[in-house]
Amino acid sequence: MKSLLKVVLILFMILSPMCRVQASEILESEEKRHIQNFINLIKENNSKKIAPHVDYPLNRFNPVPNINNEAEFIEKYEMLFDDNLKELIIKSDIEKDWERIGWRGYMLNGGIIWLAPDNYKLKAVNYLSDKEKEYKQRVLEESKKALHPSIKDFGRPILSFRTDNFIIRVDEIERGNYRYTSWNKNKKTLDEADIIIHDGVRHFYGSGGNHNYLFKNDNYIYVIQVNTFCNKEDECLKLLVYKFEQSIKDLRMISEDICCNKGDEYRPLLSEKSLKILMDE
Image (cartoon, rainbow, N blue to C red; front, side, top):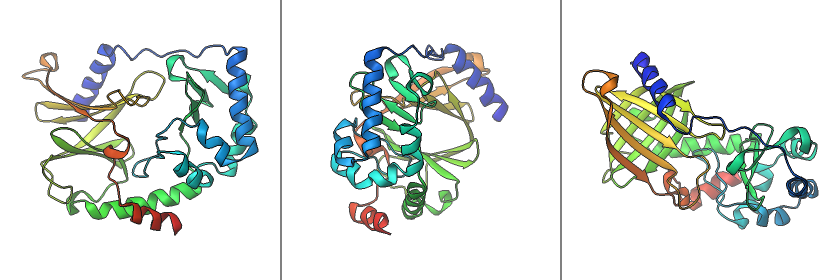
């Protein structure tokens, strides 16, 4: 199965118009000034002053809920920005450590921090402090209580979202080995799943983090496209199903299912009360 998935992966790399790597560009003086302003905000270490300069929602690592507004950012600031991350930003060299990656924005050290291309607001924090790691583990253990016993065993959750027709999960069972789980939209994740596919692979394309998860089930290929830098009007998650008759050359798409982009709707949310209790532990 894995060998066939590798063939499919190569095919998608060849066919994908987005597989070209976008080179970084030389920063201009105005861009440097805005980046320095962000560095100065972190140096000042005042969460209330930083909060208006964030592009919400600020995505966090599944199953941790996203940060949706200034109040939530201020509340979670110390967990988000520990001393190590603040020092990394403050001591960064704009000439050497920051890059402009086309329409995606400005990144620090390969993408630990991203600033938006149009307004220089904080767009992504690809860093987990020790406090957030502990919080993530508590949320994970609590969220497993909402899953059918047959799928509670996995290394880490990757995606959980609804489309018009399905509830879909992707979990990493062990490093580089992914599992696809799907329910009819009218079911709950506590119910036995309709489809479970093991031995999936992940394929990155481009330089901004966009990627696919690919799974084979008999003569069907399930592809979940993840648009990392989507806007509110974009399609952030998309399920594509392909079928082939005799060989990979016969591959054809038979369905396309799009996930709405409404903040945390694609995550297995706990109640606000539960999250507050976990935050205070």
